[in-house]
Image 1 (cartoon, rainbow, N blue to C red):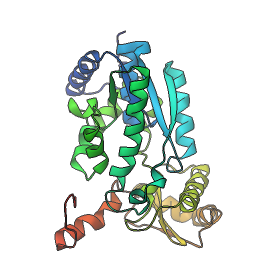
Image 2 (image 1 turned 120 degrees about the horizontal axis):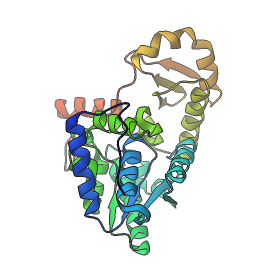
Image 3 (image 1 turned 90 degrees about the vertical axis):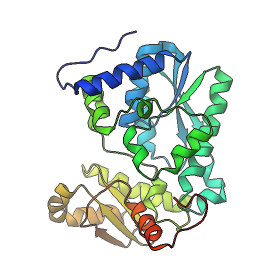
Image 4 (image 1 turned 180 degrees about the vertical axis):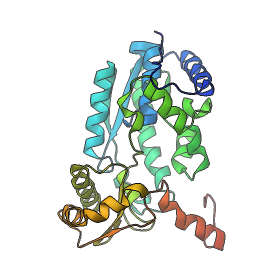
Length: 292
């Protein structure tokens, strides 16, 4: 199969060159299992894999309390639209106390669980390569989950050819993928401050609050959990409108069980929970193997 880029939202020539390299990398695979979240990165990767390898491409999503139900539903819907077989694999990261304790290495244990199960599925199905949607920009942040993937032999083709988030979005728009402008999505455990133990009850509370806010039409936000207080991060340009809608936003979040609702005046920024880690590292308060 051949991928044809639509000219309505053309990516840069450099992005096109990298995309060509991406298809070459995929062509070197005999078959592939795509760790598929339904986000912008893994959707572009899934489309490219299916265009190159056809039915030898399978998508698989993890099912657990840490993955919002709406995200799983959308992932399944997109895979069906593409004509890709989509598997749902149950993961048990919450049963691992190293994960539930919510240290700064939480994502390592989560991804070890997910990729370990997906690797087993790939072997059972005779799929040669397991890939994920890590992009080149992800390599510059603190992402212990990437280390877990490397340990288990997961390939990251987008990162391998140097495709960053802006490239991914431009290419996705050119391909007509509806995810091209989808806000970044992270597992629900990222809503908790490191050291605050992860429980099913807390995850459900955060999920309910975010579902309620999406019902108000909000996008690209996070509900950060602080006991009975929910701290909402919104894109900075949406803060003035949010203040005007304070009453309905407060009502929506309180319906999930929170007693207090705060609006973070710094707005949403990716990896905000890592800010405290960098501060502790700078002050010498974070030591030991794998500190960052």
